Amino acid sequence: MITRFAPSPTGPLHLGHAYSALLAHNMARKAGGQFLLRIEDIDQSRARPHWERQIYDDLHWLGITWDGPVMRQSDRFNCYRETLDTLWKAGFLFRCTCTRRDIEEAANAPQEGAGFGPDGLIYPGTCRQSGAPRPGQPLPNDVLRLNMQRAATECSFTELCKDRTGVHQITPEQMRKDVGDVVLARREMGTSYHLAVVLDDAAQGVTHIVRGEDLFDATKIHVTLQKLLQLPTPSYCHHALIRDENGKRLAKRDDARAIAKYREDGASPADIRRMVGL
Ligand code: GLU
Image 1 (spheres, rainbow, N blue to C red):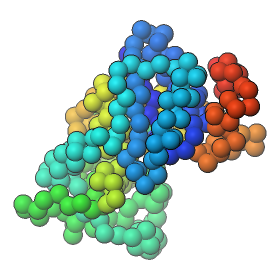
Image 2 (image 1 turned 60 degrees about the horizontal axis):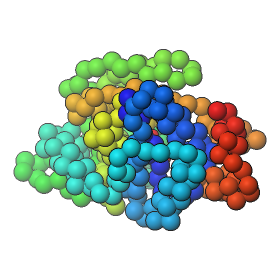
Image 3 (image 1 turned 45 degrees about the vertical axis):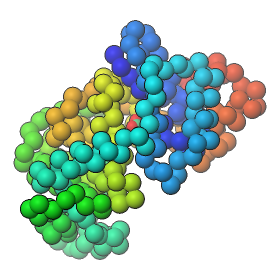
Image 4 (image 1 turned 135 degrees about the vertical axis):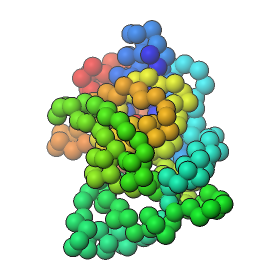
């Protein structure tokens, strides 16, 4: 069993992160498996070295140890581009020049029937034809979307994914209808969260992914990408979110519940475990 914790160094770790990390860590340790750490810093405009140092520090304090070297996404941009290049040459991607406004307007056109997917409005397909790769055209450094129609016709799979509300089926056809042409590369990053996570989990040989239920829809995209790229699909466990006293989920900017803040106030690692219900 190989589990992982994959925080982004864009703010302090809070109780929700502690819960995820402890669950994944305990799961691996109990099974005699490995627990890996990955720093998800593709968004270089928001990642900061001091947040990364704080992550190591908080995890050590919580008693969490990880195996092997830490993987950092910022070291792997070449790998992400290589996969994009393969998908581009195989005609699975198209270049998208739509602004958010364009997407809103097109999606709101009466014949389109705007639907919402995991990444916001379902893309209405405006650039699907015009942005398709022309013969010999190199991979552009631009916004690239996955042509989900094409993926749906070329891939066939049915995967079951479980959360607290039940078991959900993931099929390419459903992805086409409910998710649409997801962005796989952003101009300023050269990749996207979805693509990077899928390639990293495969490269690290992760077998069990423990993450919050807010990422359930992202999991569907990740499973689809795994099928398309012929990568193994790990087992997913989506845990309940840690909420504040008003029932609101904790956010990165919720500094009040940062682990560092509790430490400063004299809490012990055992207190943190109790607070998250472990
Ligand atoms: N970096 C993401 C986060 O902190 C990754 C979580 C995941 O892929 O499980 O929310």
